Every structure is written in C-alpha cells, then in structure tokens.
Amino acid sequence: MIAVEEHYGLTCGQRWLLKLLETAPELARPVQRIYRLSKDFDSSAFLEALQGTVASHPALRLQLVQTNNGWMQCFPDQEVNVSGEEVRGRTPEMRAAYAAMLIAEEAKTTLDLRVEPPVKVKIVKVDGDYLLSLCVDHLAADEIAFDLFEQELLLSYQQLVSGSSVSKTVSESFYTYLSKEIAQQDTEPANLLYWQQQLKDVPLNKDSHDEISWVPASVFNYQLTGASLQSLLNFCQKHKCSLFNVVIAFQVLLLAEVSGSDDVVLNIPVSNRARANERSIIANLSMLLHVRFSIKTNEPLHQFVLRVRDQVLTAMAHRQYNYSSLSRFMTAEAERKGFNIEWLQGCNFVVDNGPLTFPNILFEERMDNIPGRFYDVPRSSFTVAARQTKSALNIGIEWDSIVWPVSTEEMEAKFLLAVQKFSGMDVESYY
Amino acid sequence: MAKKKDIEFNITSLDKMEDKRLNEIFEKVIKSKKGASALKSMMRSVMRSTLKSAAKSTLKSPVKSVLKSPLKSVLKSPIKGAKGSTKRK
Image (tube, rainbow over all chains, first blue to last red; front, side, top):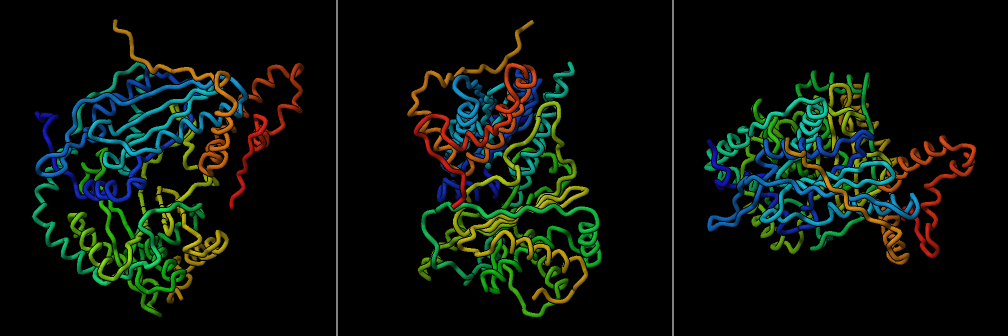
C-alpha cells in the first residue's frame, strides 16, 4: 500500500519545466483545451467522472513541496477546482464576448502547485451552450497524458450516464515509473557530459532579448492522407526510419534554408513511454532534448534522414539528465560570448492510435484547435506539431514570420516540395 | 440515498454591468486575436441558437433579420462608442 503523503523526487522532464517556470513563467502557463459540451450535458455525471478520473491518477493531484533536498512532489487527495458561471443579459454578441473573456482568463496565470491543484475546470453556460475550459499544469500532464485524460473522462461519463458505476482504482503505473527513473539517476552525470559536448560552441543568437515578447503567429496546416501518406510511409519502410524522423529532417532542412545556417538546434520532446504499461500513464513523462544537426551540401536525402534517425536515437539514449545543470552550462557559454540563448525551434510529434471523435456523448466539439484561428507565439519561435493517426498525418507549422521571413504560401510550396522529395520521387539531395 | 454533488452555476447578469466595463471587455476580446477567434467559434453556436429560435417564430421574426450575420455585428460595436477590428496587422 502506498502512502499518498510520501514525497517523490521530480522526473527529469519536471525539473526542466520547473526551470522554465523559474526563468520564463509566461511560458509555464497551464495547458488549456476548450470544448463545447453536448446539449444533453449532465453536470452531475461530469463532476463525478472528473473527480473519479483525478482520484485514479496521482499526477492529476500533484502537489509541489520545497524540502531541504530541493523540490519534491506528493499526491494528496484533493478535489478538482470546478467553477460554473452562467452569462445572462444584454445581446448574444456581448454574452459571447464575455464568455470568451471568462474562458481566456482561465489559462492566463500560472498555477501555484504548492497550494493549488494541477487541474482547473470552468464551465460557462451561455445561450443554452455549455463551454468547458480544461486546464492542466504541464508538470502534471504532457500532450499524450492530456489525450488519455480526455478519453478517460469521456469513458467514465459515458458509463455514469448509462447507469453503470466507474472503477475507482488508483493507477500504480506512475509510481513504478518514478521508481524506475530514481533507479537510473546514476546515469545523469554521464548524460550531462554528452549534452555539454554536443552543445559546446553552438551558434547563439546575438539579436535575442532577455524578455520573451509575443508576435502574431504565421500558421500553416496540412493533412496528408491516402496515396500521399502511403508514399511517405513507403519511403520510411524502404529506408528503415519513421515519420517522426522524416518530419524532423524536413524541419531541420527548412530552418537551415531560411536561416542560411548549416548548424541547427531543434527542441524535441520525447515521450519516455517505452514500456507497454507506461503508455497509459496520465502524467508528464516527457523530456526535452536539444538536438544539434549539421547540414552537408549534396548529401542524398535518404542519407540525411538516416543521420537524423541515428542522432535522435543517440540523444534519446541520453535523455535522463539534470536540466538545471545543462542550463547553467549553456548560460555560461552564452555569457562568455555575450549572447543570449533563444532556442524556440521545436518539433512535437505524437502518434495517436485512438483519436477522439467529435461530436460524442460529452463533447460536441473541441474549440481550441480550430484551423484559421489567430494567436500569438513567442518571438523567434518556429514549431512543427505533427500528429500521426492510422489514416492521416496532420502537420501544423507555426512561426514568427519576422525572424523567419516565409509567407504562408511559400511555406505551403516548400512543404509540398519536401513531401514530393521524401516520397521517393526524387531521392537526390534536398538542395 | 445521498444527493449527488453537482456544479453550481453563478449567474452573471450583464444588464447589471456598466456600459464602460462591457465596452472594455468587448474591445479586449476583439483586439486579442486569440479572443476574436474564440469569439468567432462561440458565435457560430449563438448563430445556431438564433436560427433555431427564429425557425420557431418565423412569422413574427422575419428570417431576413436573423440572417444578418451576428459576426458582422460583433465586429461593429454592440454598444455605442466601442471600436474594434480583427484585421491582422
């Protein structure tokens, strides 16, 4: 029997996020998903499903504790913070604007996990619609965990509205994972040395600023299906690599082309869910890798992808390291050169074998990922977010077009050209 | 049998709010690109509700006035004096 009050060390990924919270709190806001709920929404069943799901997964009850040995975490029983608000009066436009403001306010401030639970829920009732804001602190859940949370919430709700009871077993998998990471801690110094060697003399941005500023995002979304997807999969099969490798290779080549640099660092979060029982854990197990790639002129494309594959695999083998120590090393490197570190180029790749379909019994639609929306991104960022399902590869590219001067039309042309080249129609060098 | 817990909805009446405060919120939402797109999504459902209620009372409420885009009017000022734009810079 596990005592819930017991304190546990933070995982590598959590130490990275805590460092982010200390250095750039505006990037450590909770992750928010927004939904419009079903017209037949049963608030009592939803509350029970939510409390049950949170009770079953320790990380969703995560509390930070400062001890003599640094930051630790524990998982006390705590209820989710759920608030409801109904907006009435004035015009439909005013009510919708007010509801939008209420929802936006939810994710504006960082959560203080010493005193607040990591899950924060708000339901806004407006003109007969129920809008749900579901915020989870990134220390408690990564993107895969959020998908799992969403799915479990739906399943429990479904069972409750059909009159069944839901299982209240506490998942032990997260504790098993924590024990595994603690047991591997003696590998961290050697892994840190690997990262220091990899990132020594890395190009730094002399134009970067101490404070993060936000700029309107340029956005390009594309879905590959059918023959286009199959030809990419054929390329992967032929060259023994994955779509993950191909997407990274595409982004590295694109960044090199736009920046004119042959030395590119990409932030790649890895899921750390190698074992079968780790794939269902609702927690943040991800770890950030700063992988450095070099471009060789006239290198055949498939050879470059294989080099990317091998480099990512080696980086993943060194994924357990102390982020604070690496951060100190990089800060010293930057100070020595009088520059700042501004690595905001990232590639997030998720394999989703059971994507949620909308509408369903609980969620009418998800509203925060609707194409065509406008939003801001940190200055100089360039992120590729890819999601592979059984039948599609969804790619979303968002970038600061001031630092990376590429129009959406140019991005589309570059993307389609890359797909054509990776599809094996042209296996010569990219340039 | 114990009564099931439920979510309490606090009622916020915009009628009780000052025009100035509402104008500020409205401008803020419209000016923030993220807010404007969230508003656009929400207005789709408001439009649906409006169309549904219009269908019930077609004779009293001419369809013509319902079909005037609520979004269009959102981009104008709902309260005299408010200004806003969703145009990207």
